[in-house]
Length: 189
Image 1 (cartoon, rainbow, N blue to C red):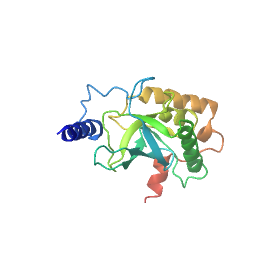
Image 2: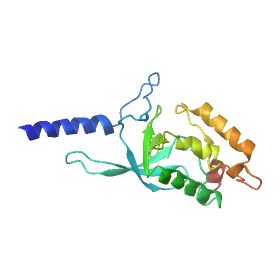
Image 3: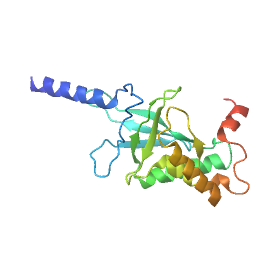
Image 4: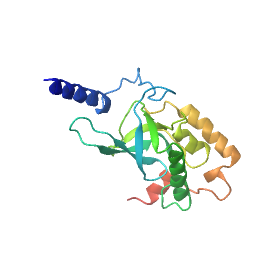
């Protein structure tokens, strides 16, 4: 009887933590990261490019471990074929994540999934730095907001202005010639 009770508790906890639920735009979720807070960590298993990673989601009870792709909200990194910028962007994202021991915290906005089924999130490192913002401020990605996920749009706008003034990364002389969005339109998959 005890085992049945504990199994039910584990399943309820898993459902609360991992089943997406509709979010009221007037009451967005609070950030999952707070220094010293006992929040769920996610391990990054792969960096796909400069704005997409995969994370491992641990299973409970008899539910298996799985991976989910996560698209970083508010940024657009050069495509891998936009040489050398796509490769440099991916490398920098990998560096940021490795500095956090491959552990990140996710914060969601209004919409939690994109049309490709990827999770949409702001990634925080173990020290509370927002990785999305760091990618923009160092010139490894550009501002790319898609409503309704605009929680940090002003903050990202300021980060991009600073990167442009410092001529960082893609903003330096001879930098990125076409935005990733323009490049994708000319090179459909």
